[in-house]
Image (cartoon, rainbow, N blue to C red; front, side, top):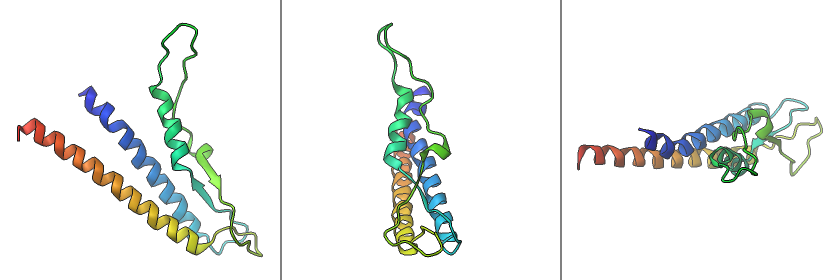
Length: 129
């Protein structure tokens, strides 16, 4: 079943990182009134680019082999620059965070639906339908 692991590895990472992003956004919303709280976000494109590093292999003896491939959680987080600064040092803008959370939840659901369709297709192929 190695082909299944390879086929679903990218989707598993995408769901994990999308879930982490939703956790960060919900923490931002929860701390909207906390003085000096800095809004954080996860750059999904950058994280997924770094997640592909582990599929690179060397083809010649002069090439360096890369290790890892997945960014640590803290390294992937970035602070958001607010449109309007608050007097108490808080950088959370509730309307922006809510909009980003809504989009992130839609992206998570789309990735999950795509993965469910792939599993359904494999299941049908194994049953011979």
